[in-house]
Structures are given as structure tokens and as C-alpha cells.
Length: 378
Image (cartoon, rainbow, N blue to C red; front, side):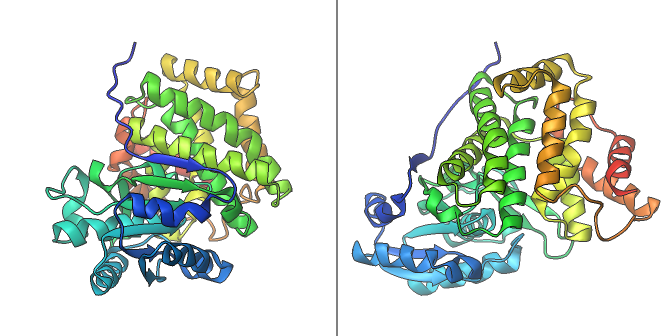
């Protein structure tokens, strides 16, 4: 049996319409002055206004930071810190996708512990207490609401820094599938594929445990069955709820088992070509799986994932993943054309240095990453 140390840090509140409880839950956390961290799309959808109104009805002062950008960097975090100081807050509310929650977590590090965000790259670098975070995902993808990591891009290299600390984890994750119905098709597709890949990667890492596997397997079952239904019928609230729960379970699995080489190789694709993260991991994961099955334990776990989702084999699993990518519009060649061999080598070097890849069940060399990139780029 694999050893584990399971310390759940996040309370999960799930259900259609539970956004109405945000004020009550914020008060339970001791909040009196709140900063809602969100992005312009969530504002336009009306979710930010509904959240702020519910908080104000509970008697809380509400400040808004509406400037979240995709793949937030140190500059974005600094702007959020300035807003938090202006409103003298005692609680963060991260409302949106992973970028909103990452920005809130990053700002929390600096507001409470000082310094620069690069100081917190790694695990456990915050020496002082941090403010409580209430996370409200509006996408079913990153699972950031159930993780203690903030992924912040370096403003120069654009490579992502993983800044993790148990104190950064959300105290409460509020999962309301009604908030995800307004997502554009491509956002639904990319975030949903990201959640699916999280389940696939967490199930086989060197750090997996009996506890993490419970979450990985159920996340995979939920996402594999729900994502095609959501793509076919975006207003299917039941399928939306299954995806939201699956993404949260996959995030919990990440917290307990980490990720692998699909994510390590995706980061350079995003840094050099701006490929949306979920699109990148979706295109890379099958190549990673085909290499990982060389490890007998990983092969057995992929087979268990397939069986648990009603599939007959790992090959059938790969065919289902390919079919979902096709349905999601993510299977076509990338629009930027084929990069040079020199750039592929540079990307492979950077992928091999990614911390995430160190948890993969099979060690990838630079040559392995080059071959993986060639399969999807050339």
C-alpha cells in the first residue's frame, strides 16, 4: 500500500444556486471587508454584480478588482495587492477561472508576507499567516479552488512559477454549476479538457496515494462522461454540475499527487506560442500516456481508469480522449505552423526543467520531449 498524509484544507459547498450563500459563508470565515478578484468577462456575465450584492446584503464592505488576465504575472499580482490595501480587506473572494483564483492567492502571499511573488516559488515559503480565501469557480477546469498553489507567470520568460503553501488554499470552495453555463464554447472546451487531463495525470504520478486515486478515478469518470454532453448541450445543468465537481475532485487529486509531463511540456507551448493551457495539455497527453505505459504500475492504473469509466482498454481510453478533442475543436493542427528544430530543442530543455515533470512515472529525457513536440507540431 502507498503511504499518504491527507490533510483536507478546503470545505466544498456544491449545488445549483449556492452562490446565494456567499455572504453567509464569508461571515463564517470572519470576513468584514472583502475584495472580489475577477475578470472583465465575469463582470459582463453579471456574476460579479450578483456576488457583490450577496456580500453587501450580509453586511460586508465589498471592493472589486476586475483586472484579472489570463496567465497572470507578477504585474497583475501587484495591481491586485494595491486594490486589497486600498480596501483594507480581511478576506479574498476569487471569482472566475484559475487565473482569478491564482491572482487572489498571489496577492494574498504579498499582502500578508511581503516581498515579491518569485520569493514564494516552491512550497511553504510563507512564514506568516495569510487571509482566508473563498473560491468561486465559474469554469470547470483548473481545480484551483481545491489547491494550495498559485500559478504566476514570470513577466520576462512567461514561464509559470508554482507558488504553494498550505495557508494559500481556499477555506471554502463554492461550486455553483449555474455560473458555468455562460462560458463560451471554447472556454468550456479548453477548461474541460484540462480537468480531464488532470485526472489522467494525477492517477499515475510517483506521489499518488490511495486517497489521491479516489479523487483521480472519480474525476476521470465524471469528466469523460459529462464533457461530451456539455459540448453538445451547453445548457445541460446536470452535466455542467458533473464537470464542476469533476474538476474540483481533480484539483484535490493534484493537491495530493501533483501532475506529470503533459503539463511540463504544455508550459513552453503557452510561453512561446500563446496556446491556451487546456488546448496544449489536451494535444500532448496521449503521447505522454503512450510513453508512461512502459511503467507497469502506470499501465495498470490507466487500465483501472478505463474500467471505472466503462471502457474496455487503455487504447479505447485514448480513442475517447481523441474523440473529445475532435468534438471540442482542439484536434486540428496549430495555426502558427511548424517551429524550427532549434526552437523545439529549446522548448524540450525548458520542459525537462519543469518541476511538474519530476512526478511523472517515467523519466522523460530532453530527447523524449523533442519527440513529443514533433508529434504535435511537425
